[in-house]
Image (cartoon, rainbow, N blue to C red; front, side):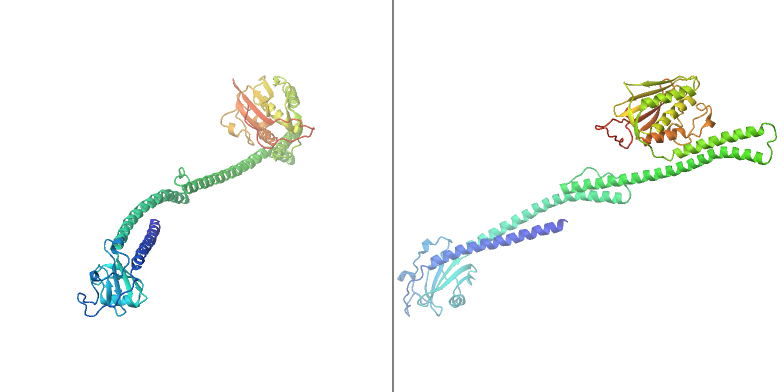
Amino acid sequence: MLGPLLATLLVGIAALGIFVDRSVERDLLRTVDDELRRVAGGAIGSRRAPQQGNQGSASGTTPPGQRDSPFLVPEDEFLFEERPPVRLILASDGTILDSSRANDPFSEAQRQSFLETPALVNVTAAETGRRYRVLALERENGNVAVTAIALSSFDASMASLRQSFVIGGVLLAVVQGLVVWLIAVRVAKPVTQLSLVSSRIANGELDTDIGPPKGPAETATLAADLQLMVDQLRAMIISTARSAEQADAARADMQMLLADVSHELRTPLTALRGYTDLYGKNMLTQPGDLDRAMTRIGSESERLHRLVVQVLQLTREPLHHEPADLADLASAVVDDLQVTHPNRTVSLTIVGRRGPMVLGDPHRLHQVLLNLGANACHHTPDRTPVDVRLGSNGEHAIVEVVDRGPGIPADIRDRLFLAFTRGDASRSRRSHDGAGLGLAIVAQVVEQHGGTIEVDDTPGGGATFRIRLPIWRKPIGGTRTPPQAGRASDDS
């Protein structure tokens, strides 16, 4: 990851260095060329032909002290270099007609090249090895004026620039490399951690903690999204496992229900079959045997009929909803219980000015209250009082059936509202009279009305069954509105 970034930075620095080097070199050469043209502008005067045999000039030139100089720009005005420029006047055959005080550093071949290609060129002097910038201009009389400026300062400036740029480039590359490394580590470390966590999660370790988001915004967002994905995956797996457990529990309940139904049906059917076999084999010969057999057959048939009716009620047959006054229903249930249990005190307590209204099936709600009251009377000693209490918490009507009996055994409280659940002998004096479907039917009817049912211990001993049902209020305009489906709250 760092290699490509550093290579890109080095290429960029090198390209910038080349660009700056070329730009500075071009600007400095332009300055040198301007100076060359200024100096060369003074070497355009006429020139007398040299005299043969003139002493003092081996090359045929007149010594500067013995003639007027053709260079109009004095050498004292040349300020570009500490060395004065080299200025030559060349004849068409390469002979030096005149020169400045500066020594001529060029060879004969170099001077000949000035005649052939007059232009701005860089020339390295054959004698000194110093570089010169040379401007050769052809004059009107056919001679060539050559002006050359030493590039020592130019070369020194460029060398210093390049050295500074190399040092600066190296330092810049080091600093940028360090910055890139720090940034890469800051970005790569969280990504590496996320990669390791993702690998562990992919291997099935769903309890792996991703931790708080770290690094830049993109990495933090990635970590947050990964955490959300893992949470949803965990929730889905838990939901699937719970669904599987519920399915297993439902199958187990169904098997238990079928077994219990079979067991409950077997008892009356066995009795019916036994009496019919006795009659078929003419074994009911004693006086009164036939009457006793018919009585037992009728009793077992009635028991079988009740069992079938209760099982059918567990199929959640549809309800008929209409406004119902719980106070009227509770009062009717108390009257029924008082008649059927004359030795027991059954009372009704209403909290508030009047009982709350609910929307439901009055017949099934009456059945719920009657089953709870009969259950309290059936499983408590004689003369034990039973109290039916009615109130509300603003959102739900609350009905309580309170007894002072032995209470509910702890080992059956969790499955009390399941089908075929019975209490122990201390609570059921005549356990053979029922199949254990009453409370299951009560819980189903309450749930169909959008309510809940629970059981608590009565202070001082006994059991309290508490029902919560959504309160129905007459809407504006008189239109009936059914209650919202769902479970009631646990407010008391």
